[in-house]
Length: 465
Image 1 (cartoon, rainbow, N blue to C red):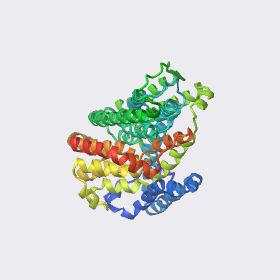
Image 2 (image 1 turned 180 degrees about the vertical axis):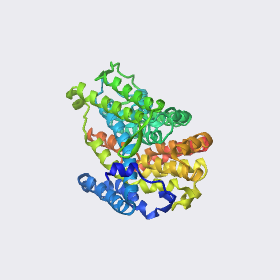
Image 3 (image 1 turned 135 degrees about the vertical axis):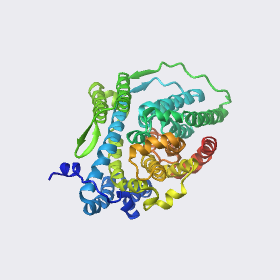
Image 4 (image 1 turned 90 degrees about the horizontal axis):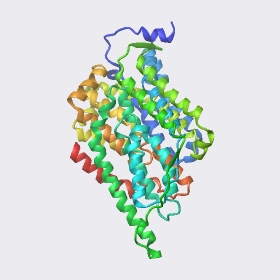
């Protein structure tokens, strides 16, 4: 019997759900995978750059081989399910947004003033929810660096760019940040994330106002030796977009995601996994937008943008390992207080606890799997044993604050360190290539994140949760 047939014909059983029989030891490869991502780039960057695919493969095999040996066809089904339902859509969206944004070049950036810098950050913050934090960051970081070229101290501009464009700005739609897209794939409606608008506006306005005051102070201090303390007016420069037709492809990606959320379609078995036709249409349309961008954008535009495939290659490899090893964590968490992590679920009950637990873990681990982990903590505690679609529908209707807390904690607090969200390190690397002296890992955390972000998140948590 072929694997596909075996999976499609898995017999109904009175056996307890997988999450109730799995040991907590099954989570060790997932923890090892995340700790490798967090620590190896800091402890041995040269080794990590050369061997991260091997490290990822070792952790993935450390889980999948014994899992397949112990659970056979059920294990094959679970692996194929997470690949087809989570990994492929996740990577397809990131690849398409990365490809489309890489074909748009912003030219004619004016000379930096506090108002110009704040405006660029505000534009990027709003754009991030619609073209993704990765897309917005790759589109605007180079114009921001060009505007601030020649300043003696401008690393704070890039730090706030990471805060706002690479993280907070992705809060309003599933297109914005990978955690919210995973929520969309698991049944959270596309427009439900607009419930986060008050949280988004509060944190964004607070950070933009703080940035304007700091940038104005620093610019005046740097100008003091010349005797000029007044903010010079910005040069009038015409802003032009190269490859502007890629905006149509970005709109096509938005339309494809919306279509899949609105179209109630029949399902079809793919390798034994039930998928809706709307899911398949979404992935095909999103991929088509990326391919059209590649076909219609001259190579010179991508060269001008400093475009490279390495960032998306790294994301593809690392998240293959993450999604493979996260299977037991998700299954156990879905089992609620009947699973091996009952001690954790029993202690996280209030929305503010979900906000801080999700956020603090998102600070040091990638925020996408962290979101999925704590969403399932909520589902498992409140509705153990129910089908996922029923769990999600009920938690949104009966406990929406829990989902809002997990969502905002994951998106916002990915900014707390360079390793909290994929675009953070990408922005840092681009800034350093341009000659900007960026803070070290701990310099970023202790000099910037703790004194600026922590008070903002404390206020947001107190007001909203």
